[in-house]
Image 1 (cartoon, rainbow, N blue to C red):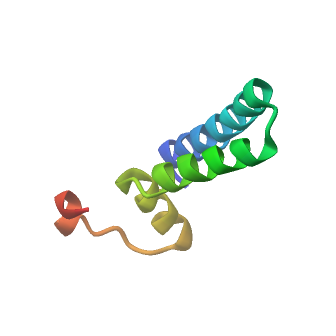
Image 2: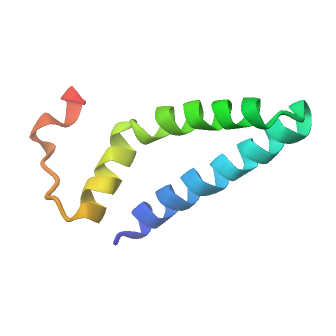
Length: 70
């Protein structure tokens, strides 16, 4: 696994945790915090960079021929 992949996954997990705790502390609502973290994760995990990271984790080859078509 590349160091960039480790940093990308660490960023995803840490930013999700910070957002979850922050929203819960501000709103005191578990439902609002869960909804916002789900939307954030859906947005972040569909970015081309994170899609490539998870493809590499699954062992798939990364083909850059359609790089700009994502």
